[in-house]
Image (cartoon, rainbow, N blue to C red):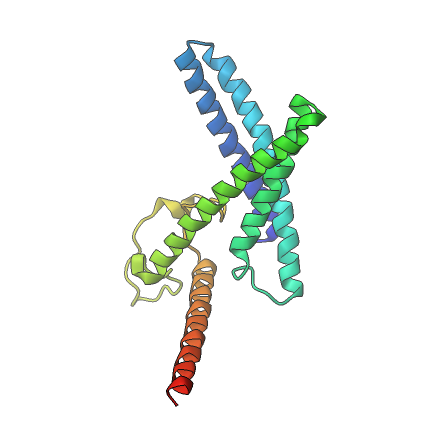
Length: 212
């Protein structure tokens, strides 16, 4: 999938999900307050949709820029994925929070809005990254089978999965694992093992020198 198409899907899906969440929350609050449900749902949904659209557009802009830098320095996207996501979410949250605070409350609220929303988005990204890393570790340890690419007669029959027919963005926590993503996981795991092995060899050499 091209980067431009991935960006468009992420922005559209993220905006829609944010607006839907806002509308649902607004309707729930209206029911609890015995207020007009439709008015609350539409108002909250629109506000959350504006925030979501701005946030995801800014976030994808930062991620695209960072990936271009990775290419220039010969780095793989999988190697900097976590820090790129954290930085992009923090900057997008701060930028969006500052802009919307200025629009709704005036210029004096820019700093407070940027700090508050930047901190919230950073915290959410940290939690998402931790959960996603746990999921990746679970996959590498045998939680799920490796994606099947060869369709010869010796391959077992694939189990039906509705996730194959739902095209979700790569950042969404539940999506069909692609061959490229699986290879990235293996590559990351290999680099981690190599680093641990190098550290172990240094410790062994240090122990041998002390023993001599």
